[in-house]
Image (tube, rainbow, N blue to C red; front, top):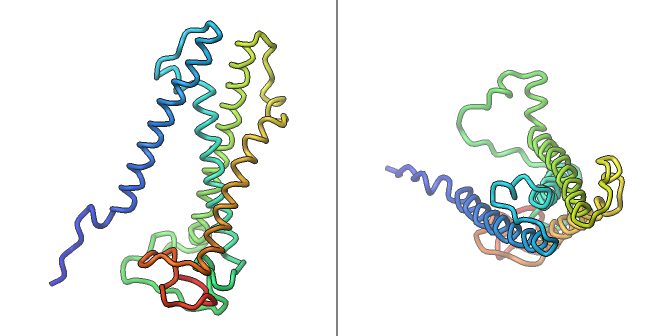
Length: 216
C-alpha cells in the first residue's frame, strides 16, 4: 500500500520558499533600518526604532517597489504564454494543442457553479497578479512620496505633493529600473531553457530532449 506523503513532503517547496522570503525580508528590514538611521543621525535627527521604521517611507517604498515588479512580471508572463510561443523553450506551450491532463478529484466549486463564476475562475491567476501589482504599485507610490518628503525635511526643502511626485521622473525611474530587470529574467529562462537543462526540474525539458522540443 502506497504511503500518504507527509505534510512536509506535500508542502516542501512552498515552505522552503516562505522561509527564504522571511529571512531575506528580515535582512532587508535590519539593514534598511541601519542605513536610514545613519542618514538621520548625520542630519542631526533621532534614529528610528523598528516599529517606527516599518511606517517610514524608506521601508514602504523599498519593499513595494520590488513587489510591484515581481507581480507585474508574473502576471504578464502568465498572460503572454496564453497566446505566444517560443520554439524549443521549456517555458512555452507546444505548437500543437494537446488535451489537458486532469487528475481525479473534486472539481473546484466555481467550475461547478458555471456562468460568470467559471469565467472569473478561468482567469483568476492573472486577475490575482494584476490585483497584487496594483496594490503594490499604489503602496510603492505612497511610500516613495513619503520618503521623498522625509528627505526634503532633512534638507530643509518644501514638501512635494503626491500628484507631483507620481508625475516625477524619479518615481518612474524607481519602477522602470525594476520592471526591465524582471522581463530580462523571464527572457533569460525562456531562451536558456531551449539549450540548457536541469535534470528533474519541471522548468527544464528532459536532458535527452532535442533543442526543438517545446514545453517541459
